Length: 268
Image (tube, rainbow, N blue to C red; front, side, top):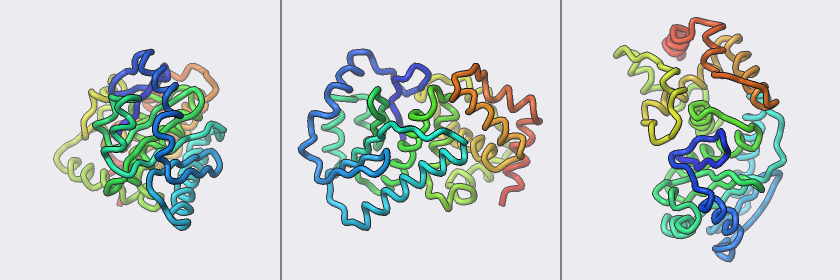
């Protein structure tokens, strides 16, 4: 799970140079456009697929993506964005890599990625076992960056991890939950300041992604005052107001680490 960010505040495993960004923007529409078997747009979501899908599959995909958009904007109180999000579905890993090699070579080893653009956000994913999870993850990045001018890296990844599972699994059935509870038994403790200090995804490992998810889960399902702090923070970001570090705002309201640990010890 990966996204390449060229927005000034958007973080990424590797930074794109200006020449690579220019190449990306100039060649994304050209290139393999003739390889798309089907193209369909509903709302702000445009799907381009190298493989055929029947009507039920198209309906299910758009229902889930549009539902994810509605949930994210509603739960986070974000203004809907009119920017198109282009989903590129590749039939095989090789066709995916061939398409990206000349455009975003940093992404060819990944199973999916998100690339922001001045005209639209673009998500790339090839068909593999569980690709729907990767699609939801990268689509979440695209939604966030189409609505907000800035998303801290740890929060960006935490939201993507939270929304990458199906809607009925978000609160109680994310795979991170069982592992986090197991680690709590062996004395694990959170370190939000450490996450806030990371500036590149190459600095993050699996434990960091799990903690990013844990903070988002806590803010989505924890005490009312925590949800309000998050809402206020995102509103300031959306309005372009100075937002500071989210962790600092949270610490002003509660005994942060203790509350997060209590949240997951009591969460069934």
